[in-house]
Length: 376
Figure: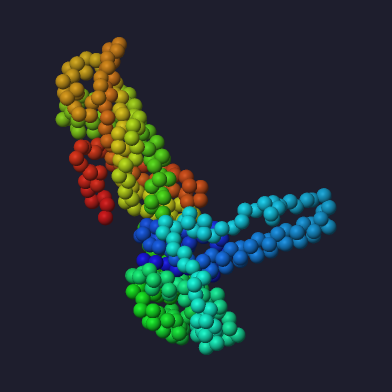
């Protein structure tokens, strides 16, 4: 699936931070979709940004002049225009889209453009307006043809006067003829706004996050909170360890304390559910495991001696040390968690970690099998 964005979709969204654009990029990245942008669109947006920046500085100078007349002691300062980093839309797009295709237009025949202008073939209209839109259109068709693009391609533009025909939501007849003559393999569809595309194709809860990026952002938070959980639920952890490692003999019933340290961290992460809560907050339910966690468990030396053979026979037990009547058993385990938390997309902070279920992932078993019916 491919999405093409026209110039007007980017206007006043220079850094792609608006909620609709953010949702679009989440959707494309999660579904392995590609964003197509014309080189000319990039140049147009960068030119619009430059003009908007110049206008903003003119406004500052005007306000400063007016303010100095009203209150001479007040000085309005702004970063010098020259010191502002140049705006590079391509870099912004590369940072947002995992798959970005840029369509070049230098090879378009000027003779073809002139003929279309004289015959007023869309996107050309009266007074030969439509030169840039025609370059964008023809170069896109050539790209789709030359690269044998198949499947759905959505052409999203707010410029309905130049691209849309009498039938609302459909390309103008001239453009439909272009599509037919190119014998494209894809299904090129006109969409007249980004909101229309999102309403028709994107589940805002399912794609509330860019899942690949989010997994990396969440890893440290999940590791830290999972270790804290293991250390603060000693009785539950001891019960699970007794059940899985020592056949419910109750060896660990009186053990304390339990300390946990990660040797190898997050692995086999799965999203169970995401939900947009509003105000940039996203609810996240997930499955994950910590590949290797070292547990140190203290118990009485007498208890240890009573069950020495059983304890040391466990594949998970690495070592045991006795001192002053206390035996410290060191074991390596692979805990799995079904947990939830909230994530703020603006502050990029996670909060409210909660574990619904946890267990040990045994050798040869998969995390998903540990919590059946959790994943769709």
